[in-house]
Amino acid sequence: MNAQLVSGEHGVLAVFNETGVFAAADVHVARRVAALSGADIGDHELLAVALAVRAVRTGSTCVKLDEIGQIAPETPESDDDATPVELPWPDPAELVAALTTSPLVTGCPSGPLRPLALVTSDDGPLLYLRKYFRQEQTIREILAQRRAQRPTVDAAALAAALAAVFGDEQPGGYDRQRAAAALAATSWTTVLAGGPGTGKTYTVARILAVMEELLGQDVRIGLCAPTGRAAAQMQASINDHRTSLRALHTEPAATTVHKLLGWRPDGSYRRGADDRLPYDVVVVDETSMLPVSMMSSLLESLRPHARLILVGDPHQLSSVDAGAVLADLVERRDRADTPLPEAFAAVAAPPPGEFDEAERLALADGVITLTRGHRYGGQISEVAAAIKAAAGTEVDAVVDLICGEGADRFADDDQGRVILVDPDDLEPVRRTVIDWARRLRDTATAGDARGALAALMAHRVLCAHRDGRHGVSGWSRTILGWINDDADARTGAAQWYPGEPILVNRNDPTHRIFNGDSGVVIADGDETSVVFARGKDIQPLRPSQIADSSPVYAMTIHRSQGSQFEAVTVVLPDADAHLLTKELLYTAVTRAQQHVFIVGTEAELRAALSRSVQRASGLGSAVREIS
Ligand SMILES: Nc1ncnc2c1ncn2[C@@H]1O[C@H](COP(=O)(O)OP(=O)(O)OP(=O)(O)O)[C@@H](O)[C@H]1O
Image 1 (tube, rainbow, N blue to C red):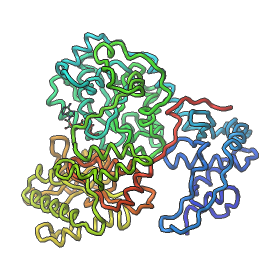
Image 2: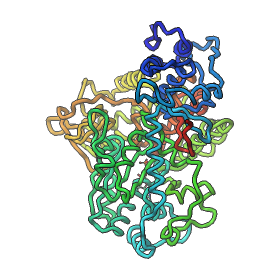
Image 3: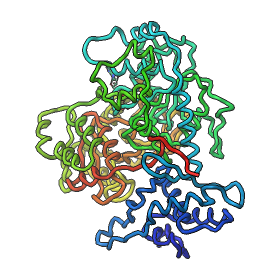
Image 4: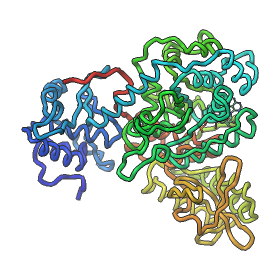
């Protein structure tokens, strides 16, 4: 029986529920809101509530009403031959007309209930659950206030600080990392975007050093990230940079955004407009994973004269909760043509042609994108760029780069290869896995922690799904089978054997390990330890100190976000699996520094590239509330 099917639902919502467009929760909330309103709620309004709830459930903050006709029934993946169902979507104009006078939008007779917000935007009418509209409005208003002013910075002092941290300006190309530091010094809000390995963390360490030069060594810095693991990684890499950066003296501690804001079990935060954060500079890493709710709370908690630096890759996977704030801020379409901050223009003005018109407007708005990859080259960076651009016919360009004539260019290139592997001939993957397992076993048995950690990060199998043949569980079984069939790789032991790769499943701040961390078991005298890499340092723990972990022979692409491996094998699910999108493929491919195997057919690759995560939001353009 389908658990999402609401029994007894016969009204307007029934067909949308039966076709999988509305989950049970969407229908229940719509019915409940209608009952609580104390008013006579029509079919269009009921449908609107369910649509708004569905939007949040699927990661959007609102519904683009002009596009509801594009919402397709969700046919089960096995049901290719099912007759397509025509959904009875109302005309968007009729829906807007019904909502404009609806008590759900204007206020209900039963009391303060006013659950929906209807707004106009460059994308046509948008419908929100009011809570999410308020959060977006908070973000919009606070960012506008912060944009209306600039910190006072002396151009000569800024030039001296940049020189102290980055050295003298080099002739030749424009240095966007240096420009990002100048921008962060001269703006209250800076967005530092860029793909993997473009030096975002490298730049953050230098921005902090520039701030220290300008504001003194007692500058108060708050570092945070949406997950414990991302925070620990930022902390470790800033520590690594500190050792090479003469100019950065303070040792800021990174924490989760939850903790920074003082999360309470009821979902609220201790910090806010009445209890602001005590920092002069706040850096948020992996901002693509920050939902709209957390971003609005963070902005409310900042002192007006605290610099905020939002760092991340807008093309990676977004937060589990609603919103894609980083992408919205990078791609805003309603920017005014404002002048660059004066001190920035004096010391870091870009030469003509460095930025196109949109990037120039973005720069004056505090947004800069790093483009030069420092981690990998060759085919991986070209494929990653092509995946980002893939839409319509550009899908062909990616396919050509991976398995057409375009790939021939890289045939002799030892760096950065991307190869499509036929699912019926997995021999290249098997060989890579066996080399990986032998190397893990040899280093770990010898008690060589550094060698075992290097082996651990040499290869990882990444799947879109957790379950099933193409998922983590199926592939883990396949890999264990390969290892056990190989005399030099097999271990025989069941658990905690030297060479066993481990994935942590729960945050444990006491032992400084976080959900998604991977470590490896090594021999340690007569016992075993599990070692984890912390930047250039190694953290050893006893197996008994790790409360919740599992062996990791394969992992989901979602959990791999923020990690890097020498080589990855990306397993494509069947072509009709809705989960695989180009954002997921981009995230998976960019986890590799040198080699990528994509296990799948050309049809599966094309299917992934043709599907994109669509998150509706009103943050990218100007909006006005109707009624
Ligand atoms: N200007 C530079 N000169 C030399 N090395 C650099 C420079 N910028 C970055 N790097 C090096 O490139 C590598 C990637 O940089 P970094 O980790 O800062 O990138 P990132 O954008 O934060 O990547 P990710 O998003 O994947 O974490 C690091 O080893 C870093 O030290």
